[in-house]
Image (cartoon, rainbow, N blue to C red; front, side, top):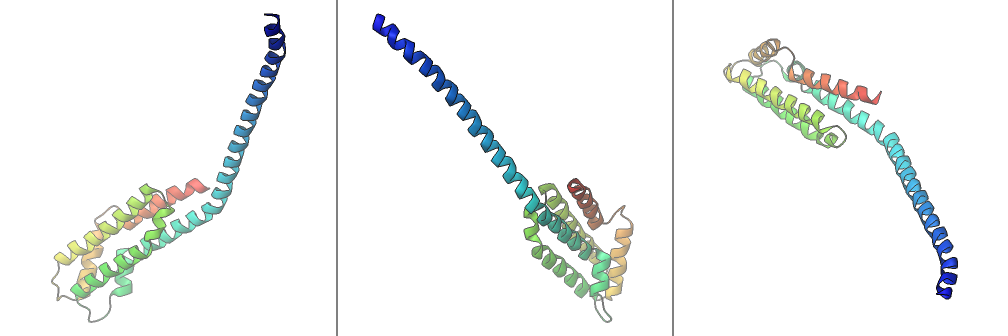
Length: 173
């Protein structure tokens, strides 16, 4: 019994020192990991923020380019038929959309859904306006029909998306 107490006299303080050291080292390592993680996130944010802003800028340009009035000004020319204008407008919208698909990585999922919706609604407006004119009518008639459809709305689909993007970008400032 005496030997056991003698051993316990040395082992117990050593065990207490060991546990204290272990807990302190464990806490220190945890704090260091947390600090490194925070520093890494800060560095990533510093690097990614300009890229995200550029993505929002490119999406805004896309939305401006697919605005029906912009498309009409850009594509409509003398002697063009409404069916040809409809086809060229839809093809340009799809090409612009495909060109900007990669931007969805850098913007929020909600913003991307708003952008997709703007694109789809713009195509619907063009197609429904084309249904109201004859395919062989001058492109000017289709252009008028599209602009009248837009005027009846509170906001054009692309403008709704641009407003949403502006609100989201304000988060960065």
